[in-house]
Image 1 (cartoon, rainbow, N blue to C red):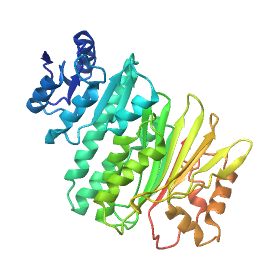
Image 2: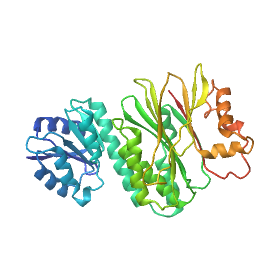
Image 3: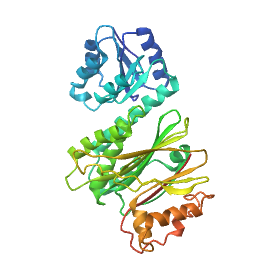
Image 4: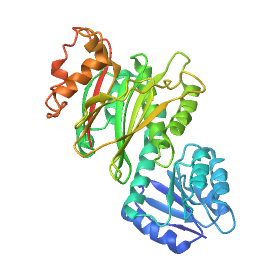
Length: 373
């Protein structure tokens, strides 16, 4: 049995596979109210037919169908060429880590345990739809610099978006389309991810790589999966599509404000600086391989206790290179600058940036991202 709701033609299309028709009707009403085109199938055969007739932007698949396994249905749908890059959310009453990891390793983009909070469900749907749009945007971008500049501005979060996630940024690209980039987004209730990345080289290709990396991170980042595993998967993809001489450094921060924990991963990038009381400012000193540098990469991660109103700073090596013209130990100098301005908002008041004497010719992009817990 299949059902197709009549919604505006411009709504994103979502195909759900679940043999509980009553549950599908409830989910369908919720998605319809949020302007999504929703249709569902109760088995794999009907799902394949519907998918071919209405190429969906997102798949939602129940893991425990009565007549077949949800993972098998997922693999059948992925054989359809038009669905190769379509994200999929798995639904299940099974909350075991083994099942969740199995579904995500097979290619699932997210996993939701039933029953779920409807607002969190809508947030995850929105994230996956956004991921799909970002990936398509990255694939279709023109090589013309003017178009790349526009695309990069769209890919970077706005000041308002950052403010909603308790962050602010100072950004100074070397060229119109820089090789450094940053992002911040909510992955679950009370859980927000932030990162700064740097592609070696500052040309048109750098911006294309940045767009692709952002799409991959949003597609794969999931708080149910360890950060090391997520970035090893991303490295496999990036290694296959970027030239051998290109690599990307990343510092990635996940803040869980429900349990007041921060998790950091470094991939060949300067580690973040934490500003806390009563410890003052400190650099967490992590190491790791840049993405794309090797087929098999390793990363260091660290979990740190945090408290309300504490600050965390992510930055590109461009700011360290600028400091290096006046200091032999730029990371220690930057840490001291942050420690001396512990009361003020370093980005908004430009207290840190104004303390740095930038050389006449900046040789690298500068990103300075400040997060308030």
